Amino acid sequence: MAESKHHTLRKQFQPEELQKLPPQVKSRYMAYQEPPKDIADAQAITRKRLLDRKKKIEIQKPNLSDKEAEEREKHAKLIGQLKAAEARNRLRIMRLRYQANRAQEISHLIACQPVALKAVRLQALVPPHVEIKEKGDMLDKFSRQRVEALLKDMQGLLTNRVN
Image (cartoon, rainbow, N blue to C red; front, top):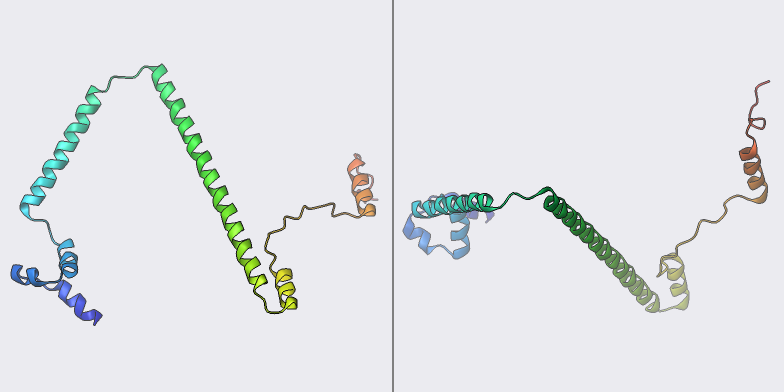
């Protein structure tokens, strides 16, 4: 079936046959054809007119002084900083929305459990809210004293093991 569609697109149609085609097939076929001469001429004229207009605007634009150019640069930099701040804010809001939706769905799944034991297990395995654990002191008292002693040893007496 797909092959028959490809063959119809590759086939060269007569204008009468082209009019009989469904609009989707006709538009697919016409997309790869060269535009008619009048349309190609109109496109060329439009391109030329746009280039002429661009040149005319550049000629009319007065030369900016150094001060004005510096002001424009500052303004452009400020605009860039504002856009970056807005993007960061959008990302933060999206992250918060995602976390809230995730927590809500997990809470709903936990609430829908038929047995309390299953709900507790699910809550233990998949907590609704991501808990940010602060990294506490990973060293015990003895290790902490050893590290402090090594840091205080400026002459390397504790670590130098050469006889």
